[in-house]
Image (tube, rainbow, N blue to C red; front, side):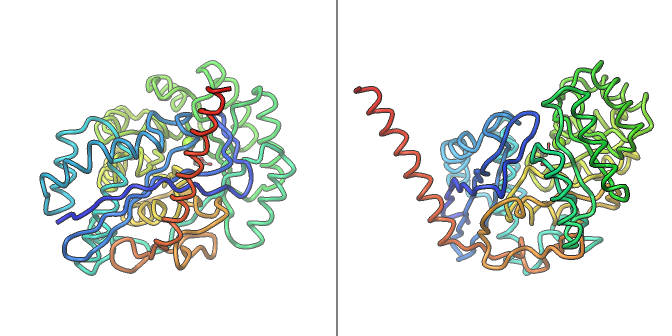
Length: 386
Ligand code: MUC
Ligand code: MG
């Protein structure tokens, strides 16, 4: 039975500015969920988003507030005895809030796995692979810096596939940047992610140039509200078109799969509303003949481990993953870091998530975040009284 649910806002700076069409990140603010049970188990979950409300309709603060205000009282009152029952209860009583639901489900599955002595992958149907290839995102905003960074991570045998974030500059400037990088790294698979920045007309122009320049994969070029447009782009071009923001819960993924709106689905556990939903979306895509890509919401190590368990169960994952989130952060919150080696991530094998969270460190970070928030409040008071 659940005894307590703590939610913590944990800010960790990024190793450099991370520039997307929708925001520039200098830190990742993780929402960590720490659940303890009456019989002495504890589980950890994580929700992240990108740049407050820039990427999605849930922010770290809304996730924390909604868990504290609505999820926790319901779970404590109703006392569900399994993860499945808990998620059923939440889905029946709480609309939306997919990111928050993902964090809770992760922590509950961590506990369930620990109780049964099996990794989460085995609770999700069973892993078919132990290692996932991991792409790196080049997003410094500068072409030469990106090329140097790419060469360094290839040399270190960390990554050999790359994603470029574009969409904040003109089409001509973005294409020039991408082609320069593709030419510097001719043997590497290159994805470009627009984060919905282009209109359909822009996309017709831009994708033609990118395709001619040898780019391998085009991610969410246009608005997530335009599935028909995405399908038109898929039909028009040979280069693979990947759906990201538009792939949300299983119901909407079913529509996209049934209508073949994209060649590839980027699946993210937060966006899907949890690990089981992400498995379901993967299975649907597979059945519809759509390729899979293991996406990230730039999670820290908890969300990354959870995602790795999910992606390890996919029947095929031909476009690999981008589970590099922890490597973008300046500090780790695990007692032993996730195992990145030979261009990939090893899926943890221990019970539950198979990781050990440094609880003291996490609570310290959360404390510092609280003092930061109250310092801001005090400044507000000073300004009001000035
Ligand atoms: C996204 O849109 O895919 C993934 C990698 C990265 O740099 O940003 C995320 C979000
Ligand atoms: Mg994306």
